[in-house]
Length: 416
Image 1 (cartoon, rainbow, N blue to C red):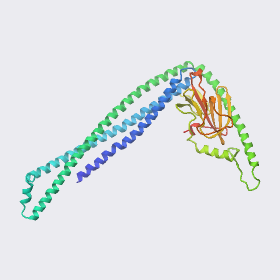
Image 2 (cartoon, one colour):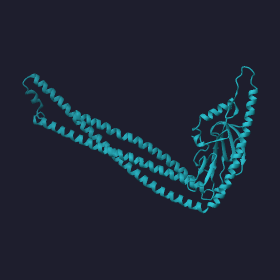
Image 3 (cartoon, rainbow, N blue to C red):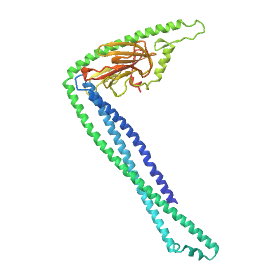
Image 4 (cartoon, rainbow, N blue to C red):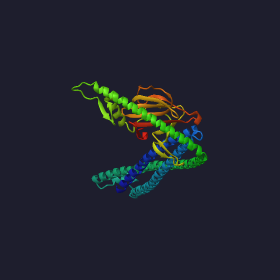
């Protein structure tokens, strides 16, 4: 009985090993698939972005991101292989233990049969019963034969069941070994692609060094345009704040002189109406869950804030984030609000500011505008079409900002 208990315990441990490791492997596999999907997006954007002086930095950013994601895929593959390898070793060890126990059980069964044969109980059961000295002994012999027969059947069934279980587990083991071979092949393929991507990146860095002077001139021009854009945005926001304060003042003056509750409240340094304050609170509560202003394939190619390009040492400052996407893609509002400003800015085409209480989302570089100033918009509503630059290999980049008052915020902390 003790040995049976050990065998059962081993089976429970044995059966529990693979489901647990399979869950971890499945999780890693899903992460790997997600990362490969992101790589495919970057590949598509790279194919759409031809090599020109103006697109060199964008291409380098895309290639750097692609290489980073490729290394993540290889790392995930390594983790999958390690977990699977560990599980396979544990399974092999447990199969060996089960085989040893099964061998012992078979021997015990053979010994029991041989004992029965030596006592001639298997040859003539009836004679064994009738040769008893009295009725009581005959009854005991009959009961003994029944119990021993039942025991033999149970032992035989246990042996058959364990043989079947062992057969199944060996099939699972073989499947695990095949899965490991597939993972190793995938890893080898990814390493080969990684080497090609790193060569391509080095080639583009060489191109950049050859065109560094002309590219620097382009960047200086872009910095001046960005400064002009920032002034225009801040001017539009300041004018809007003044207008909002006037509206709040009028609302307060329209209230009853006695027993009335103020419908205005000062937030972020200026007075807002109750409705604006509610919208502002709602926007703040959605921090980290706002939808992207672009649908389909896109990639953040330039982060928020001060940015030093890792390959070229060029320093830049971004008031928001730059999102590259496919040509002629649409742009959508990320939250309910009011369109408070639409203007054209040299180098950035159409720009839209949508106000959400004392928060604002800013959409820059639109070709077509689908809304008007003063219009109420909802989350996910189409507001325009992104500009696709025909002179810059059809590059489509949305510059997106979020502000609280005129304070700049990192959009990546707010978007889903």
